[in-house]
Image 1 (cartoon, rainbow, N blue to C red):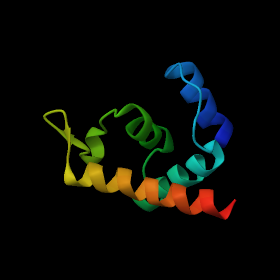
Image 2: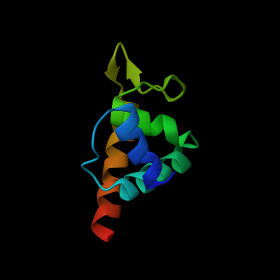
Image 3: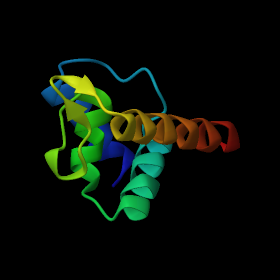
Length: 86
């Protein structure tokens, strides 16, 4: 996943301007995708649009599960690590 893909999703799908470092965000999502062996795009949608991922049980009755919260928090931690390194 590239920063440009993240930027395009935020601008075109969400109708917003990115406020975070898109390259750091792409790297964090990619790391989590490798760790979970799951689709980067779905993880990006979970993080940015709160879209549930049934295959890894991120939501229950419309709320984040413990697993969903863990995934989001881990991506955030990775993002801050990449952001501070740049």
